[in-house]
Length: 516
Image (tube, rainbow, N blue to C red; front, side, top):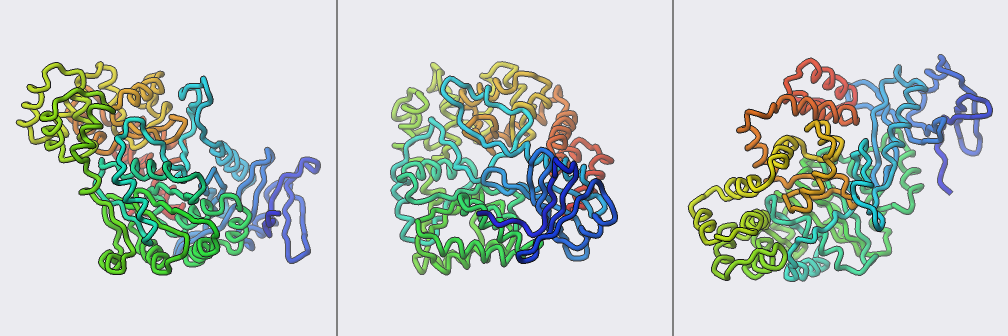
């Protein structure tokens, strides 16, 4: 049975009031509350956390948090899929019952698992226009346009002999796709896989360790919940201790994947992971994918044969892989000499190969096009010109207008472009292989590949007919309406909405987020 919280506030429909209860040992005391009172304020000042259940039965745990020299404030936590969702509630004097009900509704609206559309159901029929939360603990879907890379799969299979597998290369070399493909070649459940796609907000030890605990104890949530209730806000070291205990006590093999590790710059996280590697926990293997090397003592890891490294040299496509990709996957018909030319021009860069394939596909005079490629040193911009210019004007405009955001969904794109058919447009871009990746198996959320997005933004700045300031204003409004003040603030600043940006900075400051 799950362990009950020591302090609880629950709606009692029979009494039509909230019941506040405290448990001390085997003794429980409770009292009814019809509205805010001095007793409520006094009680809040004495507790550090409590479980809340709303009138509609939605639940979360509220915790009192602070940072040195700063105000106290309350944060709501709720498990959303495999992620621990977090929402700012307010300062102590803002802890009203209507506010708690509002937070419960917002968190419950995110508590819907993402699923693959059923047979006969299109991705657009599965779209939830008002939601953009994606669990970072899902293994990304694999595109059907990937080239088989058995040599790299074989290398990854050798990683079990080491404590760490490091996949390190710049953007566009297929790090995530390779790992996702490799995991799908392993027997189901052997090993267990814990995959975390890191984001900027994970650059905080407490956030990362809590997310990892939830992922590791997916089927034993009560264990994590009871641990987190042991203190108002466990110290980072205590949380990591729980992680180590969980890993050490595992009986099954575990593959722990930390993708996009370049988002992590917090030294405490690097130090903790190195201690994990040094302990060489049996049956646990760590995999890190990053655009930059983590600040680990790599020389020492190599000396003790604790690391398997896959880098740009290995990730670059061989001539054979380039041939298979161009001819069989992308259906581009080139001679052996032309393929060698393309492979040399792109230097095995997988994103460059894809751009080249989209440029060359269906072109009758490939020899002339290759001659133009040879004469242009800026391959990325040249290929982008060719790819984008081949699209209808409506597609070109959509690409440029949506290039300023790092995340795409139908409702966001509709607001930015003032269209009503953005979901169909996103599906078209995916089908056309226009450097757009789905972020969920239901194909509701997408992102442009990094270098493609950068090139689009460069082109956008050269397009005077598009009001970039207005685009940022629309994007900022959407993110603010959906509770993402970090993105909203960024777009407000770019839209030069200084007063509104200042208001959001103040709100973030109250949450303990400061700007230098």
